[in-house]
Image (cartoon, rainbow, N blue to C red; front, side, top):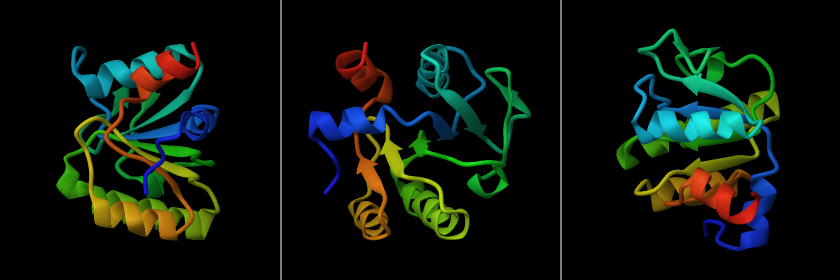
Length: 140
């Protein structure tokens, strides 16, 4: 069951290095503005977008597997039907690299089966919630 307890969500907001799958290079889109906000709050954002070279002043990568160094949390801005594949990639990375502590599915994004799979692999999951809204509510 995805995390809904404020204390548990606040703990995830303590994680620093965030891979943003579906990070957009287009200002005005939530998938650009929310990672930009998080970056301004001191989070290290790693944009994952195979169609961009650079986003938010950072080199974009094509996939989670291409990220050098540890990933603390995977923030997902992709359609719900793509969640299962992203979760599979996060689980594989957790098993091979020993990182990825959590998956955050933004507002409107959910996949109950993938969430169950992620939790079974030891990942914490937040589903259908905005990381910016939760940060403003619980941290600022």
